[in-house]
Length: 153
Image 1 (cartoon, rainbow, N blue to C red):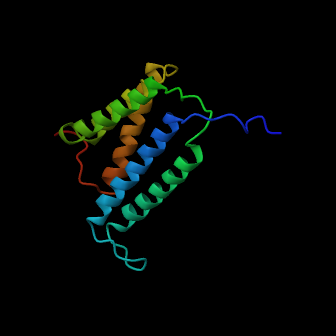
Image 2: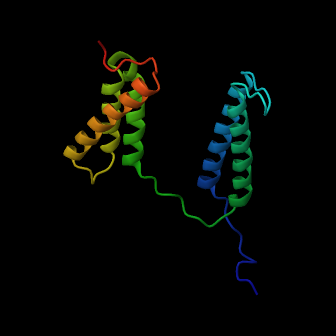
Image 3: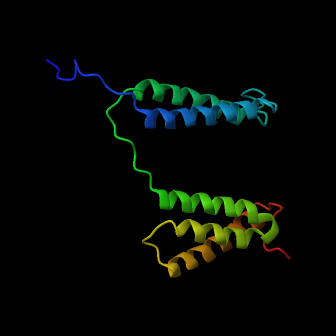
């Protein structure tokens, strides 16, 4: 006889919340994509990819909600330092890429994001930030020819 047959599982709020956030992200992508020309499989419009990915993400999130709505899993331990470091780096990049240029913004992004890892030395972070900033400019500025300045001047 199954020992879990009589026991009642609790509603796992953490996992449902994460699945709900994925569903909302998919709904947002779908909503934004519909505003553009969707087209069809032969002639895809600008909205085709966000609509398809948004709908797929919503279906996946719904399936996850059904699967995990009741489970015995403990709330996840969030790695706050790396999460905050990466988030702060992305926000700083978004705020500084236009006024400072691609190279300084990328440098700051990598430096701040790597600060989220306690095991990373400042020397390693500085070298990595310099290399990735230079590589980012070579790739996006020179190869892809994006209209973004390397520096503020």
